[in-house]
Length: 528
Image (cartoon, rainbow, N blue to C red; front, side, top):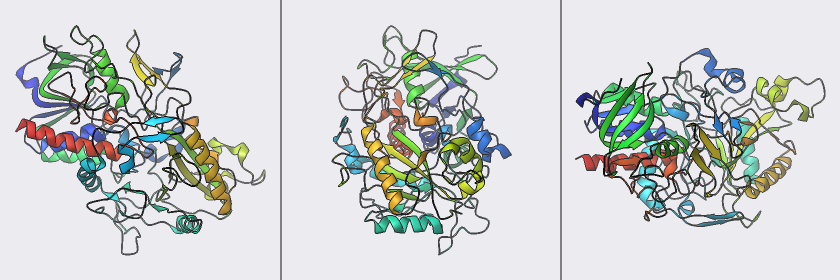
């Protein structure tokens, strides 16, 4: 049944409860305005399986039952997660800033990374607010390649355990500049950096890719949505609510309806003075395209024909290396390296970022690459896991017009990736990285962690999605203005990774959160 009554009208309707939508809705709830937050998923259940590798990775217990199609129209299952809190329910909580250089034009081996319409300094105050809100642990000034910070992190860095400290010392001896990875966790530490007994986060090894059973990871539900619901009765969350289409008035300048399929199969149309789309780069673009009408024949906000284009997701490698020395570390995700983020002595072009991953366990080792283990035929997988060191290498892919999201005739999503988008950098980083490991007495050859997210990081690896509804000052080459409002509509904002004209080479989540806070501030001013 469709209803358009007064009870269905809100000051702001926000679509999507991930790091962007959840944060923005929480910020706006504090204004006292009537806010509706629509989420297609439900609350992720707290259960023993949250921390079981085989369930999370092998059985994809929390993955969305979704089928997309690639550039050759072959079906695949994307790494999407539909829950309150969005994909942050299973993210690794690595919350980096982009560097000042990322906001300018960068020349890569594979092409040009374009400049942003705003500067690092414009976003810096919102980076601070995002870091404090999401309980990011770290220390500004450790990474000589990072931008300036007007305030330090509110929480000190998570200290390296002995094996990771030895790795950090070894990298320093090689002339490199390892630093403490900025990570969003609820961790109480003593003066020596050790976790205090009773802290919600007790340095478990289930931060990376797992839901947090004890709510100690700074995801959007824990940090933003649930506290806002508890504090502000003017905020309404509707779960299992799938938005199918945005409707405009006759002029095409105003979104007047948010057509939503409810859990019972019925439909409801909501409206808002302002509508904020925060469904993620893929789904936000798809919804805009699916909402085409006579006034917007190519889709909403798409007079420039950029909606769906310039999709980015990083050139990623998840690697496992085997050390001769045991690695009894519990909380391994504490170290990062940006020495090769820009041009360096190793190469004239940027290669990317290196950071630690969560610790592999014996089940992951058994499922990943047992044929590559060189420890002898009788070695146990548990022993191999006890010697593993796990890393994430990320290089920047570029915003190509033919890397894009489209909607097929049957309504399904097609995600076309350019097959070789600026990949030389991360390939060289891998070779250089293996050489560093060899210098440190670690296995001279690492091997891919095929079960981490997706094997070979193919088209189904959608964890770091960005682009598709880029912002800018020119309506002919961008869909949004610098406040993330659609050029073509007066009351529609798009706030998630889709606004980004480039992605850099670090996890984009903190930048998305910072922009959500910035846009929430603008919207609050507009609402008066």
